[in-house]
Length: 621
Image 1 (cartoon, helix red, strand yellow):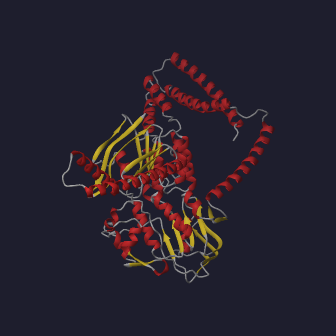
Image 2 (cartoon, helix red, strand yellow; image 1 turned 45 degrees about the horizontal axis):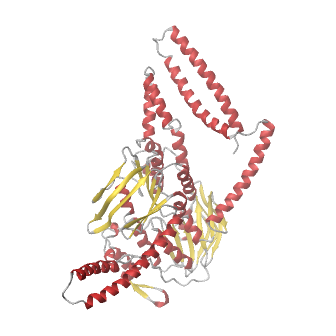
Image 3 (cartoon, rainbow, N blue to C red; image 1 turned 135 degrees about the vertical axis):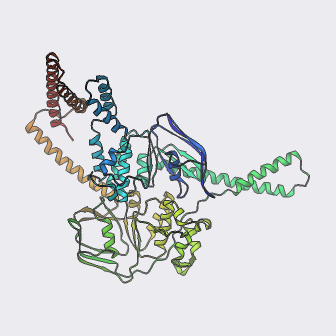
């Protein structure tokens, strides 16, 4: 069933055309990823579908009653509210159902209204809504519900907005870079959630593992045209390569045909017959097709590098803490010339602190950090480029000089360098504040690399970069001859680039693991499997000693789940009956009838509670 249809929409800002007429549809159950180069208008397209921006032409038609939730890259939240107040003030449908039910409880005489509210609670699974949002906030590391939005970091605000969007259970969930500001544990939880839930998704993301595991359709915006691929990310890569190869073959044949027709045009006399005029018209069409070229230029990262000495960085017994939070505890490590280290850990374990210690931005509490004389940092931070009002793109690069040194004594002009980073001459004279998020990140990457570092630190470098630029960056980093230190939640990127990890486990514990992220997850899974086996043995022994019954069958597990809901309903009905005793107008006969009903209900509740307790004792992992 179709949820919405996009029909011939286009958008421009001034003279700049973002995209020209686009048409496609979204059906229930589709999990769609939108892929395009930075600056192609991905975010603008999402905002049009979410009804936050109007197209210049065309329209988006929605199925009646369609509920849409939109997670922006930088969500806008009420700073005066707390985390919990933001959830409870979101206008969520489930909250409205709960409110109606609470009103019905206050008016027990209206049995119809109560029954209707009771059924709505069942329909929307609203009985445990509080548990749902508290569990989800806990998964997203927002356990303190009293925190004010004003005190949250940008990443925490993004996670709070994500929680709010998920709890709405919309017909269509639109997500703009949902994995930004999530650590790897959160991303894997979100990935599992999307794979399990029957949701309709439309998202922009650079996370290629996330794309592969979650999405069942890819829509690519390429050279102004949309291409749909019914399959995973790997399927898209395969079919895209076939499409481009076919286009190149067609272009080659068209060019040969053009040369042949051009010779005919040059030989023709001035007098034209009807037949020759038709051929001339066809020649014009062929000429236009021949002049169309794919804009497949890639970022070129041929940058010079400062000479490396024998000493990089030595850390001796380094400790650092903030009040009761220990980041490093007597940490030792000597960085080598070709180290390729990934840093992983939950948010708040001190990844950025470690980077700031290395770059001398903060000082250790105890211990020494010795840096080599030839050491030159390139530090790509999460903060990105600092925008100066009225500054143009080319002026950013000219601050480093009109000419930039390359390898083997070559040099290049600021204009030529920007072209290598996919900023054409026209774009170079745009104001920096006009650039898309991905274009700003690409410009920032340029400013870091042109300083010729030999110790490169990248803190979340993949955020907002398009997949094409990421592929080029990965190729460059694989050949980078200096020391490389990467903090990233992008598992694909980490697997490709690093060969060992610093795993920050909190309270000063750092594990130096030899391998990439997938190696580490396999290692962790093996350990977890061993722990689970031990745990199951202990549990089986306990069961033998305490109960001769076997674990729950599938049917019993379903009964167990139903019992939880039934007990919840019975408790609500008990509360309703008890409230009715307050009515002073009740006759003795009515009181007796109520007492009998309440007694039967309490007996039923006790029996089901005992059954639930027996089942819970027998539940296996």
